[in-house]
Length: 266
Image (cartoon, rainbow, N blue to C red; front, top):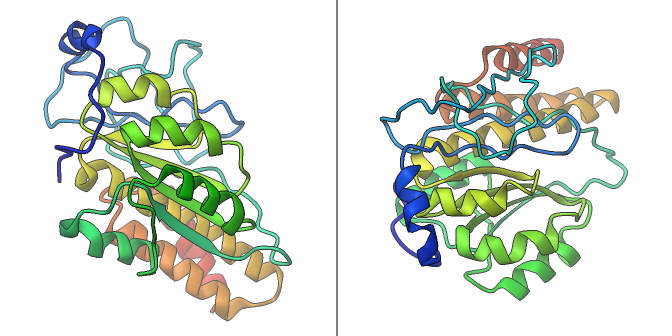
């Protein structure tokens, strides 16, 4: 479903910039936090290669070769991989961990709401509906010790992300907007922004599925260490379901690792 409305208008002086870069790809922002390896994604079905940009090939394998470029996050890949990559594994402390929370500042589309619910494995989203202050307060005060996923429009995200980005409970942010080029310019400064796109079917939902899968794997790993194999098995099964049903083209290495973890729980 393409983004068509509810996004703040861009300044007029960006019109020429957008025209010149109409083929620019929606991409995960170049994360500054250690271990983040963003992967570009196309906003349209057709695009041209842009000279002067470095290809950013990453994979789930931490030994993959990375570009030596120190250029800006808003780069165009010469060849775009269709693989959606996860966040690096992050240890969960079961003594304090309170689960996942899913928040949207820009109401979920009716056409895809069911898919969001299935990926998140809950129907209880916190629907902030354009209320920026409420959203900030909720994530800050009600999501402590939770892994919080936030979906927002570009205009609302531009205002709220700088205010909540450093909160440890904020795990991942997804920007769904009409003007990808404009919103990449600010989003690239924030490592927790996972995708900036104008099509949730093709880009946001698959990336969201992969990120929830990785968080579920982390939870399962913690349960295994705590001797709770049956509970861990449920988390690994959820991760595998997300990868195989909603990630479109998941990284095979990640899928294989989840299958191994499931086998070890049997």
